[in-house]
Image (cartoon, rainbow, N blue to C red; front, side, top):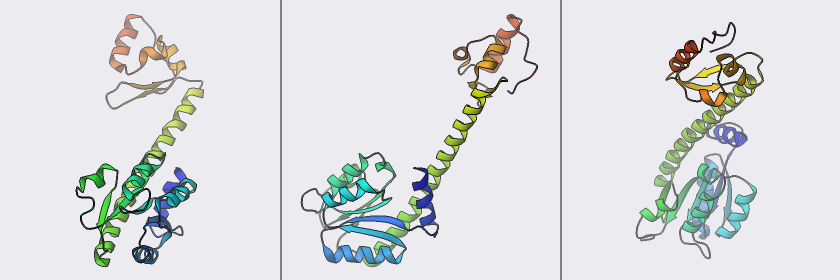
Length: 222
């Protein structure tokens, strides 16, 4: 997902990549209006008039922004939202649902299927642009956060690979001074098994170490 995070961030920040947006709208007039507004905002738009075709497109390519009309022939917009959310990358999609007057009767149903926002039909151009601005801001924050989390996770995994392969002892403590990670070399120096030091307070380890008369390591990292 790293490439997808970068591509979406580039699109939101006005980079060379365009935001890939999928529209599922059976009414051609509404579909054209959405596509025109989105294209003017720099989106790369793909439109379908039914959910079944949209599913085939989504399975081939990731779309971070999705518009779905509730009233569709065959699979309706709410069922399509549920399908998207059930996919491996479904939680990373911002979904806007278009609702006809009085449908659904309970707007909580829209949120239940996993939609982020909804727009009543017929579309009001000013309201549409405001909702898009809000959606793009939320998406930017979401993907920046996910990108940061992915970077931190990658850094941590790289660190652990290095210390696992190190010849010297390595002991990583968390903010509460408990063992977050210790490699076998350091555990052996301290006279413990690795699993015995898991989440162990460093002060307890030192106390037991002195009782066992285990000398502190001359070299190593704490």
